[in-house]
Image 1 (cartoon, rainbow, N blue to C red):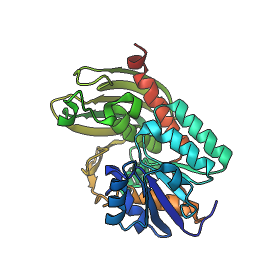
Image 2 (image 1 turned 90 degrees about the horizontal axis):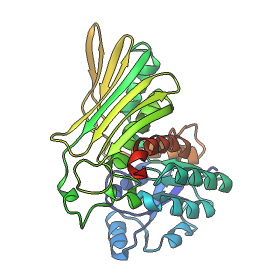
Image 3 (image 1 turned 180 degrees about the vertical axis):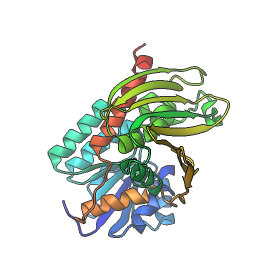
Length: 330
């Protein structure tokens, strides 16, 4: 599939599309945002007017079947990703879907299959794969800067936010029927995916998930160990009801280590016996933009490679499923 210019439509023009993604479709070369959809028509109209988008809809099917829409970005909660992906693929149009890719890995596999059958590409918005700070880490690893990689350690925990204290009005991110699980699915998916990008696929996983705080039914703590196909070991702890906010990953090798956060803009720290070196990167205004650039280049036939496809996102989903399955089988 090769297009001269990619005319995008968005299904679900909510908060994530205001700055993180939506404006990037207008700023990337050979790309244009031509239509948006939201179930509440007045909100779709408001978004379109504020972002200079020519068309707005309150019906997803109308946007999907608009002949002036070449590709569709699905920015709804994960519970509807499979449904919309199937519809977009049936219309013969490329799909760019928010993360996590779906409620579970079985849905991811269905989405991949239907896109393959329809002959359309499927991209997933794990946008960190295209951000300069993470490309720098990959460059260091490929240059064997820390020698042979031995293991990776992730520690991420945060305080309970106010919006999680009202049990009668919980956000979709902690409703498993809409999100697949709790905040682990929404947040830790970024870390697991970037580790896949940096260190390769994970081949074996063991995990435990629980709810310790009682604010909602989904898991709020997950711990796990995993083995990468390369032989690298990994261990991770994620807690969403702790006293403080911490976000730290460490990749340890035979000659040094690389320390970095998933979400903050703290410097990357490269440490060896000779000392430490740091690299700082400015956060892109629209964090999706570097990844969207690779997607548009791919769709317009330029010499580019998008590193985040349905197949890579499926691997992340399988890891998450395995790590929380004890909580949902009880």
